[in-house]
Image 1 (cartoon, rainbow, N blue to C red):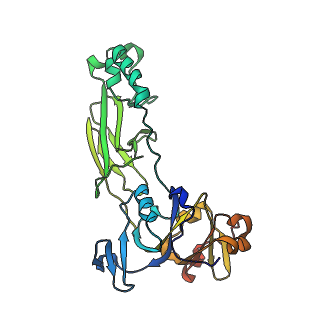
Image 2: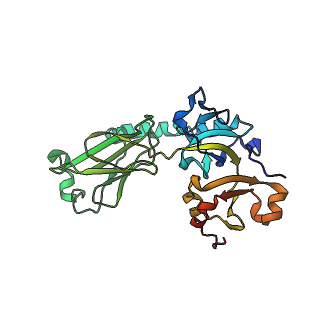
Image 3: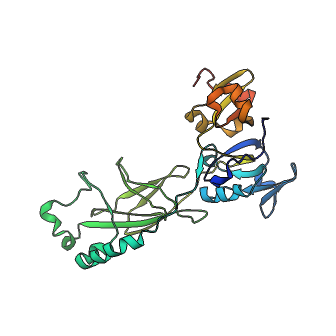
Length: 306
């Protein structure tokens, strides 16, 4: 089977539950200088529409590429490339099972049933829980604060899941945002509000004084990438080979993640008999051949044979 830069979609029965996006033809044109179009921009040089995919979630990317049968020119973030794009599992409706439990809870402990669970900071000399003797008086003395908040993308307003919340000066993560961007934690009340630190891969760090109801907006650190995109459907990860001239190596996970798109000359995808002839059983899920530009070849350690 010949090497191709076209869009690769296998096993339609799986409905693209899992795929990887690979930049097969990097583009150096300036996005801001292109003509606006319904898809995003129109490039006069290559006479193609460039689709802006930077704001799409994994589920939206899967839906988009499910409708495509050819290579796509797009605008992406580095975090959208060379990883599994997986649709989130559908939520199971457990309401029929939880209903009698909820009713029972409302009879026995109505207050606890109504209040959401919170994360409590423990084993900390500054932000410690009240002792056993003082727990019963916690509400009366107001020594415990409940801090709630929501974290969103500053530009799109989308909720951010998995944001780590820490107290400045401490290493422990005290809360994580849920799929709606919400978090909640309790801590000992102090004269001065502690500073909370919010971190998420691909976003700038945010420090903010704790309040009872927080609104946190995080700015995405964008290194935008333009070029032809190939969507490869995989049951497991394909083999990645990095080469320049006669030098080559099998890429480790760390090498793939650290590979700068500006270093790439081109990307080819091998499948079937041709891939197997060159790389044997390791090529069962295909081979992604990444050619590095000569001037960047010294940045790759070709001595590592994985």
